[in-house]
Length: 196
View 1: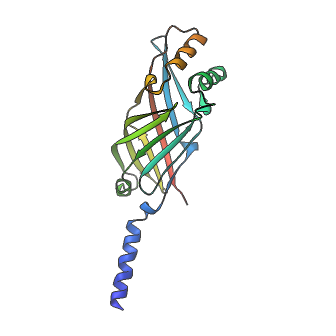
View 2 (view 1 turned 90 degrees about the horizontal axis):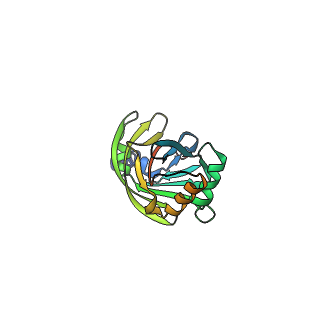
View 3 (view 1 turned 45 degrees about the horizontal axis):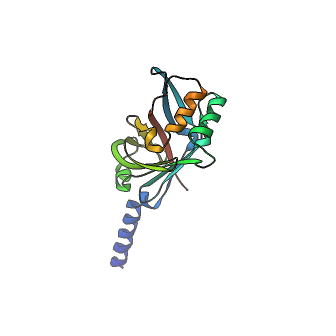
């Protein structure tokens, strides 16, 4: 009897320790943002965003964020249409996908209300190309079984890495601009909730 009680107690302890590993975090897209900055005419900067994001962090710590490129919001409908058609070519490449891994033990070790700063290896699949990235993020355990992952500093993307130079040049011609920068700063604020 004592052995059985000891075994059951040990089992309950193990289950409580591994609760975070047996769950999946679902992106709260309504309370998440992904922004990027375009720079034209050398000194003119504008902030844009994507309105539709989807994502999860699974029990192994695998992060997958899918960005609907047709949901781009630049505050100008004509520019949105040009970017989806000539830059992203959404008819062929409708989404961009960010993949990364965060050690689930690291997530589990963060107390509610506390944060941990991490350097995370990731890949970005965009326009038929896959590029390795390092993301500097702060992971915070929020009240109510929620988690936030926030960029510490912008991620600098080069359009050449994603075969987007021709698209940028087309946008420059259509807008009659002298220049559009090939370096694009990207930042994000992602909120996750435990999936029931």
